[in-house]
Amino acid sequence: MLSRHDLRYEGIIEARMASSRLPGKMLMEIGGKPSLQILTERLQRVCGLSGITLATTVNPCDDPLEVLCDKLGIRCFRGSEEDVLQRVLCAARTSDADVIVEITGDCTFLDPDIIQESIDAYKESDADFVANCVEKPHYPAGMDARIFATKLLSEVDKLTGALSDREHVSLYFWEHPERYKLLFVKPPLEYAYPDIFIALDGQGDLDMLRRIYEILYPQNPFFSLNDILVLLKDNPKIYEMSQSVYRKGVHD
Image (cartoon, rainbow, N blue to C red; front, side):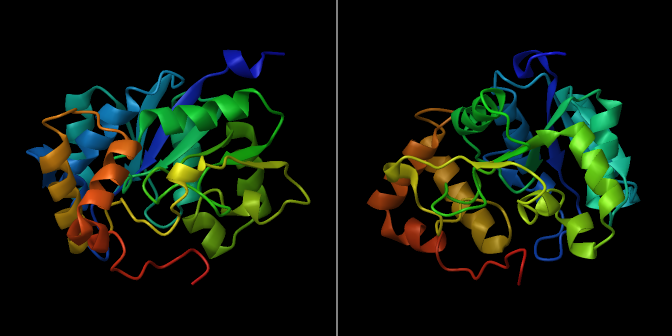
């Protein structure tokens, strides 16, 4: 039996063009690059990943995402619009992933070191499910990672047909602690800002991310979460943008 250190870890990005709040956001430019490209370039710096796959839909409006994947040199799997769990599972199978590192497409500025931290936590544990974004205090939204074995997602696929479970891929794991062993990675105190939102959901977020990128990119193209938090502290107007929009949670 292979050690967890020897398994194939695939970063699987869930993304599509038909967002209800900001349609086409995956290709909206920040500093001259599509947001999906920025996310991909950051994920490519996570040394614990064996590869990256975009899990998008068969809807023709997602054709440009497949074109971008070809340009970026990452895999693209196209599946169901509604059944995201099935889409991610099939993407994992086609990439021969032993372990899924689930990433949502709105995490444009994720910090590679924070994703690696969660991968390392999975490797060093016997947990079934590792996440850094479920139980408070957690990192600001936009630094999210959820990690679990492909074979366990295959099990969940057979166990539930609930719409919430099919839409929110790994929800079933952390709602059933009696069945699965959970490990929640907690941030150091200086990063424990669960109410700060540094992700791409609506137009206000796009404006915020563009402003952050404009300021930080010239100093360091792969600026960290710490760089972002320092910027927010020094710029009250941008900080307010990270707080100002009501965020719909999975249980709302």
